Length: 321
Image 1 (cartoon, rainbow, N blue to C red):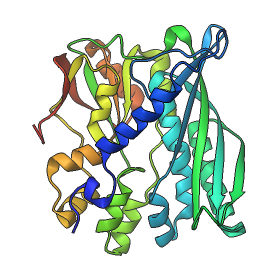
Image 2 (image 1 turned 135 degrees about the horizontal axis):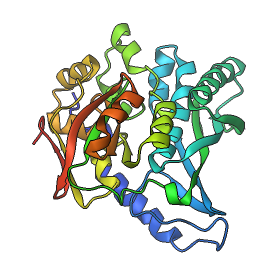
Image 3 (image 1 turned 120 degrees about the vertical axis):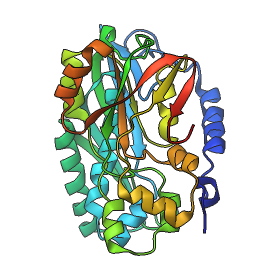
């Protein structure tokens, strides 16, 4: 039985090094004027200038969750996942999602499959309040066995309203937003542990929660200092906002039962669980402590104070530290 993401076939550290190798080759590719990159030390979306505003761009897929969705006859849900993984990243920099395009690669034409994917993509865009403005389909029998889906989303934010983490200060409050489950991360490990239990399977293919509407409502009324989308790498994503502070989580959201099932099933160490999965917290928002109550009211029932910002560095969680 595998008990780590690496043993399942995904080495997070090696993946980060591979990404760094790619980035090293594309640095400096940058036009001037409109379209010029706005550099962020850390972030969840790419930004380019457009007048006094900025376009934010994200691209992502759903990964091996597709295989479990097929097994559970839940293909329509991965369309929602695909939109969610992109638009949830866009809002981390304060950008409002405007448009989404998809790319579907298949080994052979499949009308029924495409209809199910389209249903999910449409639902995801409705939840994100963005336009589904196009896409591309490729039939690639020599490259693809089954199908894969990815997407790209574009959003807009005024340059002086970009959320880049520079306003984070000691004493700020961390607000966690409840996840709907593993979202779209860690499924290479999950699939090694899944035993065919239909009830567990339903929880595992629950679509990624989309946080666009409540977060955009918050941004318009409260000065937000930072937003982290908790995806691959788990809670380490918080440090991507600004790695010059310590983020202390001492009142975490409840861990959904499906994570407890996974941990017990794979005999997975708690630290590995929190490094691989969101563990019930799909997004974390940082605000001034004086804006706490207003923020909680605007974010609604899925929000809870989970901790605070202190001087130091890294992420401290009472469950693993």
